[in-house]
Amino acid sequence: MSATQYSYRPHIFSRERSYSLEPGAIVWSQGDQRGRIAFGDIKEVRLYRLFMPGAAAIQKQIISRMHLQCRSGKRLALSPAHYRRPYSWEDRSAQYVNFANRLLRELQNTDPKPKFVTSQHWTMRLRLSTKRKSAAVGGHIMLLLFWLIRALNPERTSNIVGKVMERVGPRLRGHRIARANLKAAFPEKAASEIEKILKAMWRNLGQVAGEYAFLDRLWDFDLSNAKPGRIVIEQDTLDRIARMRALNKPVLYFAAHLANWELPPVMAKALGLQCVTVYRPPEFGAIADQIVNVRARVMGKLVPAGPGAAIKLKRALDQGLSINMLVDQHFVGGVDALFFGRFCKVNPTFGRLARLLDCTICGSRIVRLADNRYRCELTEPLLLPRDTAGKIDIVGTMQMMTWVIEGWVREHPDQWLWMHRRWR
Image (cartoon, rainbow, N blue to C red; front, side, top):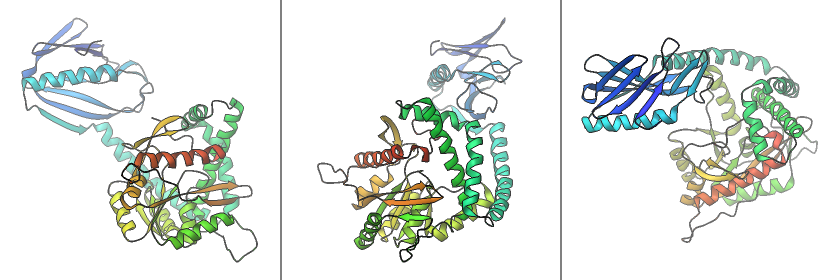
């Protein structure tokens, strides 16, 4: 199909309609019916974002649809979703985009200043409203569970939720993504070993969920107490932390979604490192505030991820504070870095801050041990790559951090979140 032709079936009650671009007009046909609309008759182009929950064959359930409003009162609709049968759609995005771009160029040639309107379709508005209301209701339910769980034993609760998630996780959509990611990362592993890792991954995720209610009670490390507790820290890590404290300048601490990934900033605060922690605000209304309050008690100052976060982090560094941040998930607009032999998009914030202020960068991770214990670790400062001018190289720095995380994941693949779409 060329860029001047496109066809699709919009719904069950319609036949497939074909469109073609001819000099000065768009021509359509549907069975025996024919029509022609001059470009000059099109007064407005509306671009809608449309939610299609039943479009199983379409990778994106949110699509963009174009409506052409004519001075004569006629209207044409173009969509990349071609209806085949109930709950079955074909994604014709490639042909649709080519045709739509060519059509828009023709309209601009006819009218240099056409009227374009972008808006949300009613399905999107309904989806957002439903999502907000369900988040509010879900938040209150989760808040009630939060307070009920806090009266229980942390270890027992963590184990119970872990076992439940071990059974539920493989039924979720993310299980397919996790299996595909694991096979691509470890092509040498047998299918039985892959399934074993997946099972342990879901168990770890369930344990993390069960531990959120006890986040302010998990830390029990006491250097003066010879009796081992829930938190295990080797002497080499304690020595590195002491050197970071004595450094008396800001340090960038990166971590990954391994074991209980909430604990690295807890370790930093408990052992005297003055840090701010970047966090992603929870979506569930009432429980979100409670989780943020618990985090603030055990982590110190928090900075929400999103627009403006980089400026706040720069200010924190100027004040002499260090930064804790998770850096192992896809970042739109990030820099390319190799992870398990494939390129992924990495958040370049640490590389940019290190280049700007010549900061030290260290890795911080948690390893889940047997009997509900955790080993906390801190790496030596990374020897960051520099360019010919002596400035820290941003892309090279992010690649070095990514390789460190890859090493962690290779060591404990069952404790990382494989269901995240890291490669896109």
